Length: 166
Image 1: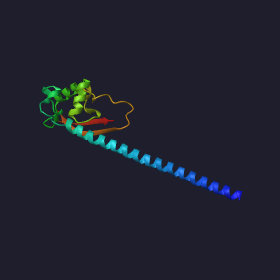
Image 2: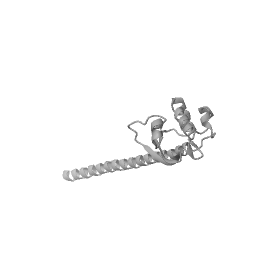
Image 3: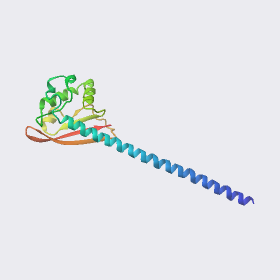
Image 4: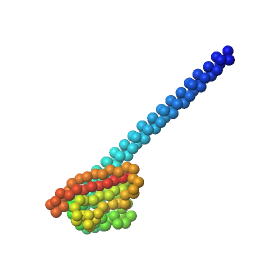
């Protein structure tokens, strides 16, 4: 009779251990599924905002002569005039990002909470501007999206690249 009780206790231990193991596996599975969907949602948000920022920057802006005023008079900064890059608008946009207060205002006007950098291909842009950024991109960025568009400067097609990160 003593051997029967030992077998019953052993099978009860096996059932409890299996139950605990299954609960652990299910918990890890549910956590990993939720984690990946959260990362996908963040990347989708970055992609949406990156496209929106690129569209706004590659516009005439509002008012169309915003580069003549100050940042508070500007509704939406854009670097194009008649569908081509306007060097004075680009220079003014770059100068706006020189102070942290203006960076915050630009981000509000572009309706984003994320930081971003953009550059335009071509030697004259690299020499004069390099990357135009709200802040320099940290080395340990986990989520980053690059949006590429094409635009015109001096009747030459140029590549516009915007990077946005969280």
